Image 1 (cartoon, rainbow, N blue to C red):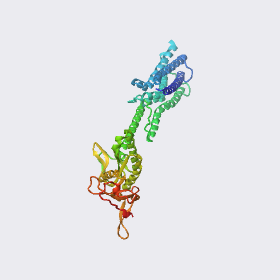
Image 2 (spheres, rainbow, N blue to C red):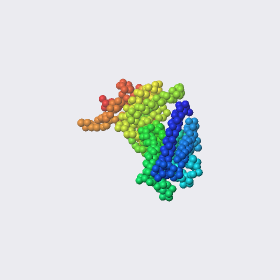
Image 3 (tube, one colour):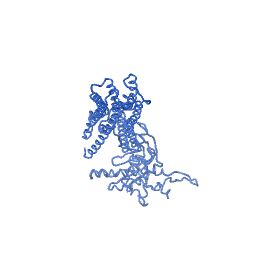
Image 4 (cartoon, rainbow, N blue to C red):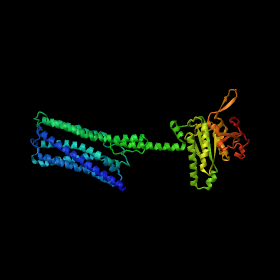
Length: 544
């Protein structure tokens, strides 16, 4: 434990001892004065002249003094060992935790010992002249006073002991409530109703059997005083008990609001031994679960993409999918194997991370979805799982931007292929392990175009299907068929010929960004060495 932490604990311990000392002294003095007043009024028929019934004034005084002193010393003795443990910084064992949880009831037992000692002191001072009825009256008064004092000390120790219980429960919260809310309500009833009303009943019973003189005043002063004590003690007891319940609930409420704002580091101290303490521990466990769920969701989104993660949370477990019109972009690094052989692994990893970062940022700007990273390649989809207004245009725009930004990863060179069309988008695999992906000819086509682009001076190539999807057919005023561009992206690409892609029998129309093939005299065979079956310039007349 650090010196700063130790100093904090010393400060807390000093404050707790001060509060406990003041609280116990005030409680014992107040109850002692109330008891002395009631004994005097009851035994004198409503007059403050103790002794007419045989009771000893000095005996009552010494009995209350001895009882209050023993009560105070015993209550502090209950608290002090826990203060010493708290200052030591040693983790609490099971015995210590149980003792702290039961500390309020231990304080009640100590109070009982003190007031029994007070009765013994009274009997000793009163001497041989003390009658049995007189002793019974004093013992009953002291019993009621001790009960009232015990209720106050119970609530004082519960309040003061909260930081101690919180420190003890850090590593092992209470498995079940001890001294629950019901016990506190019993204490509240005892302090507010039980003692004063019981006193009123016993005063009247004592008068009926002749043990206590009747009131010779118009106003029954002992009963009125007991009623006033009932009101006063009620305020005192309710203030302590309600705070013992509302304070932890207020803490939990504030913590709930912070968790609602996304602060999953929020915790509440477990310092209550009742059902509220179990609730405090349950709240912390719940927040731990929420934090873990949030981390898992974040990790899940990073592995499969935010869109797929959101889709998985919305739908049931199992194989799901549907056909969709998408734009597909495939980007692959040329010569990555040679680069890895001749370069430090950390440098390779840094270059790949930079490569994938650029790809992810560009694709995200165009509302696409990174379907997967495959070694030194990446597949991006536009239009699934989230809809995009024009998937092909988004894929083509992303490809052009990506081709320019990936120049930063020199000396690595990339090939980018773009295609579009209808694919199956959904979960592929087994029921026990599957992933979201897209299956269809456009995916194969864009991967093959990326291979071609790696050997071309135009490292960005698109299929004719992708570019042609940006135009629509119509009829002009003369009744002739015409093509109309529906997206500005159409004018950023130019047809450069055809190529028969690996694994295909028919040639594919190929387009490249206008900026990369601005020289009109440049032939496609110069762009792609030996890969062209027959050069072709399609749509140039239409664009002219």
